[in-house]
Image (cartoon, rainbow, N blue to C red; front, side, top):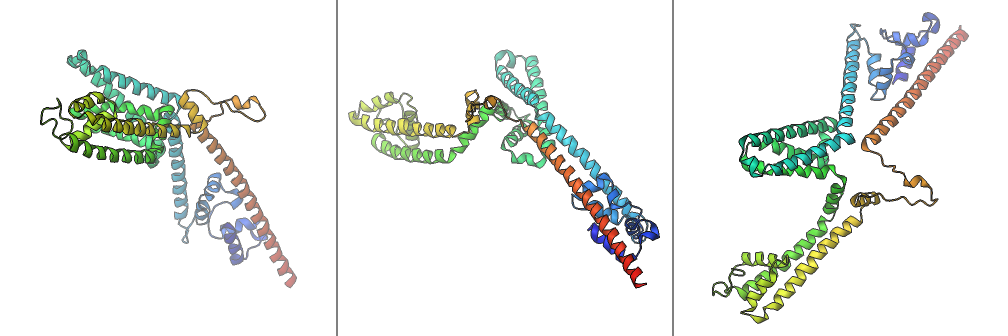
Length: 399
């Protein structure tokens, strides 16, 4: 765009270097503006050129057609807005560095643990029966909530709307908002202990376990459907076989009088909780009853439940090497082919360091683009000067 404006101004004005001492300057002053040549543009305008050529457009039209200076005022407003936006971005990055610093996150984890412990201590009689002590615990809990809210607000300042794209931060957001929303409801206040689940979002080991569990949810869902189908089949069968035993006084408890009660009894049998007592009560009336009980225990308690455990173990086994090392609390040694000791070093990079490296890389690219832009402007100046000299030479030949 700048080259078109330069060549257009030269052809329209027909000015020569001898008339004003500088052909490039005349091309810029032909429009009535006071801006310097392109090669002498301020650094802010050159940087803004990469972001949509805003600076060139504003500088070319620094004065409008009437020469009243509205274009210069607009350019100044754009530059001021750009400067304010840069300062806001710097503040946002600083806020993110603070809240995501390893020591700050460790401090937040410590506060979550202390808050959970205090909630447990608050259930003892010496706290609940003493209004003064209970008020102290409530005040401390409120302070914890304020600290957690400040931490969440700093995360929102840093991430902006992208915060809601991170499942862990969304979980923190929901917990904090519910803590404020239901602070005065006594029944809901009992669920404040769920704030302790925020430890999952802070501790990498727990976070990896949760990720592994969610990864196997489809397969676990299929196994759950299979288990429900088996329980339904056995529930119908047991209800038809032993429906009237409690009505006839043959059993002490109502195990199989209706389908719902049978489901509960089968769940108890599946967990192997006193299932032998239930079987013996039924076997006193029906000696052959041991067979359906044994079959159900083998299918549900041994096969299906262990199948669920196998799926979870398989998901954990497929984690990346460094994630498995975090789960076991150790560090996997890097076995390199050359046997060098460089693999034993911990080369993990924290999110803050990675972000800083990206920023430095972007700054390097910006500097390279500035150099390319400067070279382009110098080339345009040379070509413009050459064209002007050629035009003068042709005029001289015609004369």
